[in-house]
Image 1 (tube, rainbow, N blue to C red):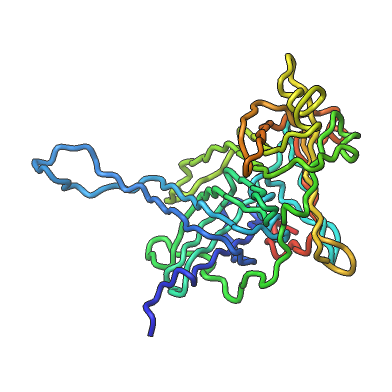
Image 2: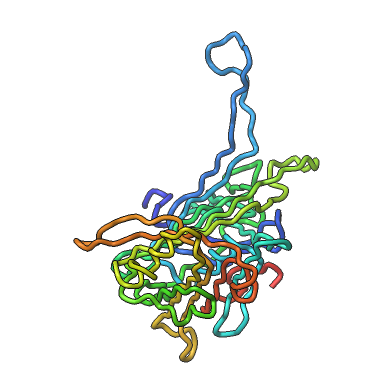
Length: 360
């Protein structure tokens, strides 16, 4: 008989909620690594007790519930969770056997509502599982590694409530773990080898602006600033009452060989080393070898307007490379007829019911 609580038996299960504050049963398991951090913020009072050691019982704080998770090989069917977690919108796909998920977040009012997720985490000891509610992504980094391998993912999840079936005072509802959820056995992975980089001076020029024989690696980082609100509603709960979104930032770092496209007059470096900021329009386009259904391939297109901020020097096995880093900006006129600052269009096999309802 083995000792219960195996690390390899850990599972990460998510379900999209229909409403803030109402947790749901998970609908899908994901092959992530990491563990949640549940800090109840127990704090000793600063009082005089006649003792040099703590005497009066501590009080609980509001709590801080996070989960720094990683995915070492991003799969196409896992992307909707990431896009919904960072941008929200409670987006549902169009299609059938082939689903198309389009995320086109707003930069100005009316802003998109967050998509909130319930997260279940535990292992083979099924009476010791966490249930964290109202989850969103505060940051997300997608990295295309050297060697054209599968993309890696770093996630910083934030939650508004916590429960555990090891707790008498804060039991989960609905019960956890949700049974019979398993990760994909043979997922379609998002490889850097399947990606094309396109950069142009206008949106209309993106399709003809492929940068060839230059990109080594990239890192695409999304950051969302949010503020949790707790209102005194006689609810006898520390749970977050509501949440506001106050800022979004997207940064793209490109590690590039020195070619005519990347250095020299008229190059991307020239756009950086300029008296005035130069608008660039960038596309990352992934096309898999695997079919979703019939002859339709898994496919992912990410577009954004960008301006360069920094250049760094580097090397790759004896060859000099540069790292150009740009930030997305809001473009209400030239970016796909006023779509804003970022657009993701994904073709995959994930259905809305697998991500979770959100009134789908």
